[in-house]
Length: 380
Image 1 (tube, rainbow, N blue to C red):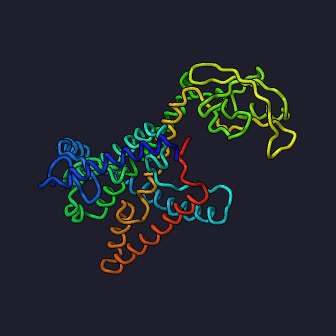
Image 2 (image 1 turned 60 degrees about the horizontal axis):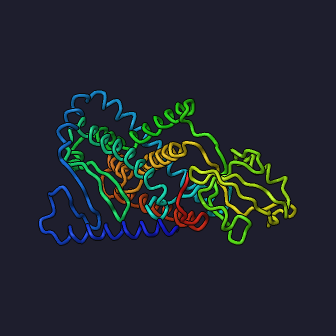
Image 3 (image 1 turned 90 degrees about the vertical axis):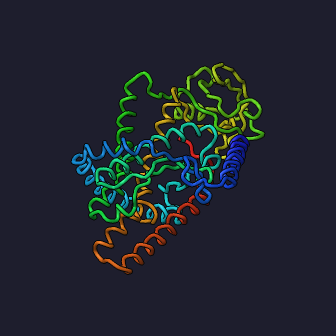
């Protein structure tokens, strides 16, 4: 973890504990706009209840059609999530190609300080449609809305739409499923909208374009050490423009140890020239070596990063939320389905057994992923 990210994490943890202790010391906290529930700080409001209920009831028929589509979509998302976790865990355990990292998004740990603003934007774009969709669908099905809000659980943000669970339990199965699937359906709809917007942006001047080779790290003792630094963008080698990784690699393939090269580097908004004597490449004798870790740099990279985080978070929440794990919506949906088919203790045991099994698979995926990929902050 970078020093800046570690410092930010410690500061955030300190502020979190301060709020926690203040709320714990207060008497009669329950019922206020700011609450402490276990170790979770909760910010909630009832001011939106009337508006949400009016809209839900006014468009009840439309919400019914959307709700049915949401149920089908939600079940498909849950099934895909189960398949993906098993398939990916197998790839991780067998070191097969194509394995993907499975990691919780924790600010300061897997979300670096430089990505925090994009992450928070993605959280907002994910939570607002998710919780509003739950609330609108509940109102359309005649279920009372108690409150809506956000929470912070050990630095991990989240949101909620608090509905009357007793009223939901008394509704027909179809209504229950509509309400539970509404959040993930809103997320996958948001995901598809973002994909469409991103492709539209590609045809505008704002489209991110390759504009150089980003230096993401410098190897100690290499020719680049104490010359280049993370964040630099190499835009030319010996006067030859290198806007892409491929172009940069082709230039370096023609280099040799001991040769003097000139790098044109963009540092912030300033162009800087460096002359370096190449070392021998540790993995390819006869080839020159600068000693940097590189990534592709883009113009308008902020836009690319914003879209990347929004797409990752919205799609991840849509799928994970529909996994058959109680208390996720997917677990509750499975519970209602099994109770309708086989009421009684057997269905409850089946739900908890399924939840325990899938939770083990999820945790095993995270642990194995951490061993394979580490817990380095995620980057686009």
